[in-house]
Image (cartoon, rainbow, N blue to C red; front, top):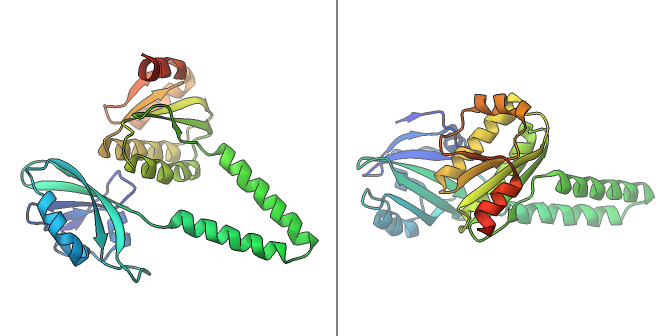
Length: 254
């Protein structure tokens, strides 16, 4: 068993048909104490489901399961498993935690607002600045727009920095994980520069989307952006259309 570099920004494991770990990603190593047997990560109540559905006869499956408590967690942690068998011997497993991150952020913001309301005028000004900054950040972050039951649009704005792609990545993968979306339109009409680290993050994001069963269509690329996108070497399944209007007509109107 060894650790390997992987394009997915999430815990990934390679197992054999007896659930023995063959390899794992850095994200998996950072999150868990790596066992010999993949099933040792899971709560006893999930074992029968995993044994029933994770085998070579089921080539591709998504399951919800309970992990044993790890890190700061005191109770079992819910996760989604995306399993794909490469052959009759080995499968890759992508693990996505269903944490309460948004709830924690909301709680923190409510606590901060409560504290600011109890302070003087100076802190009230800071509160207003904070709310304005959050509003601006929400406007500038790439929104997830559902066009049809199968197609979603992600219009990207400004430079594709690593920080921006990190912000975009998690909510996008969570929305795809909820099911139904089979196609993602990444619109570059309003994109500025594409630095190297942001480009690699974009490549990693497209790889994750493909692994989760969603195709990717890139639209609105300007001529000066073409060389940088060619250097990214996306998976061959990525397709391109000249404009967002063309993509919407093809996938949403026809």
